[in-house]
Length: 248
Image (tube, rainbow, N blue to C red; front, side, top):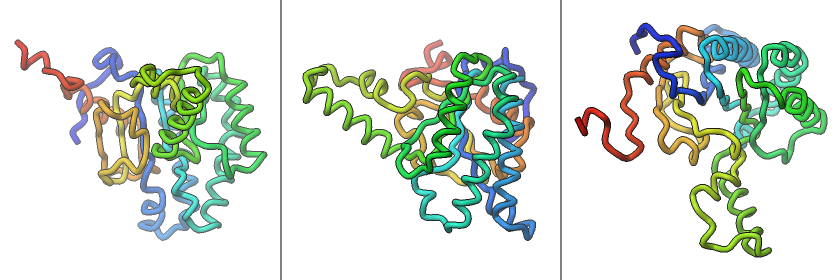
């Protein structure tokens, strides 16, 4: 993917970027390092990406951190991932807050340890009034589970009389998802060369542009982000209709 000259003014509609952070393990394996080191370097890439997003004027950034399917990984790797999450919040929360980052966490709380839930809740509460960047962490998240939970809540509302079936619209479903207060992503970036969504934001990505990069997540940089934004700028988003070029 060629890098183009890019500035935030060039693509103002790219306000929400979602990223599937993939390739930590392969990055480590190619260097003869333990997988835990790949995850540690992945956290550094998160820090770089948050800084770059603020500098580039991006208003919403959603990161796929830990999927509901990741529980099938080796116990030690899961332990390492949770340890990194704890350290990231404890080490970075003050700086994120100082820089105006608002933190949200989406996904199910089931199975998470009490101290992890407290750290997440504290981060959300502390940063709730910040406006520089809306940082959403998808943790213990799976899109099918999210949609099923939304459908269950809608069914409960219909059963209680709070909703009637005719009120179950696209907007109604969106309002019952974990991302209810967020705009849908404009751009999805997936690293490591994989070409799939892996059960991430299946509803919300209906009209997003996809950019797949070969870079492993630990090597993701501001330059990689700018190249993806430049590619996004070249796209013609039609939302099911005709492009401006087609109607001219």
